[in-house]
Picture (cartoon, helix red, strand yellow):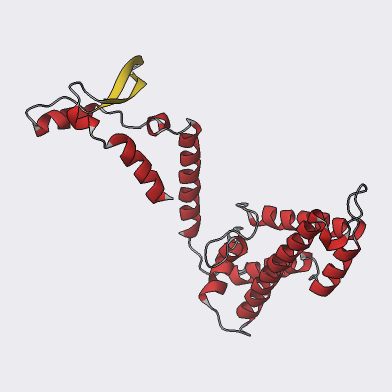
Length: 248
């Protein structure tokens, strides 16, 4: 994606006309505000027949400190998206760098808090789907009233079956993560980097990365920043799919 983007910009900005034209090539006119006054600034290549470096440097110094997204052919909201992403990354960095030592006072330790939270989330998880039972139930589902098709010959029923498979995969991943977290804190299994990362996420109320994407980086579930919202969304989605499976 980055290669395609840079090639597109390169084809637009670096072309023969910038060397053959007798006038200054202007790429974009932008209205900028300086000291309360608005003026028009031209993104261009300044004429410089003597090829003096100082002339280029002097022009670069006049370029606005913050470029408008429209200069790059993007919508103005692109700047808002960038700033929101940058702010979120900064907040996550602050959370990640907080001290995570166990409590030395009379309160609960960090591990005890995480273990209680993991047990609570584990109790909220829906039961696992049995693939054979789900497929049999999907075969019984009716199709459109105007057509004789039913079961897995109906596209919507196929979609439901695939979504239930996806939901079961997510439920299985979440259940294993929570069970491993509880066991690792108890000392029943070895503390792996994945479990340690899950403990950090649960303590910080963040969604563990392996619940969102697979090892290749492909998205496998819905993207929500907070753990509580993500779990609630999973329960609601599962309820909707389950009702669809039972009632058609």
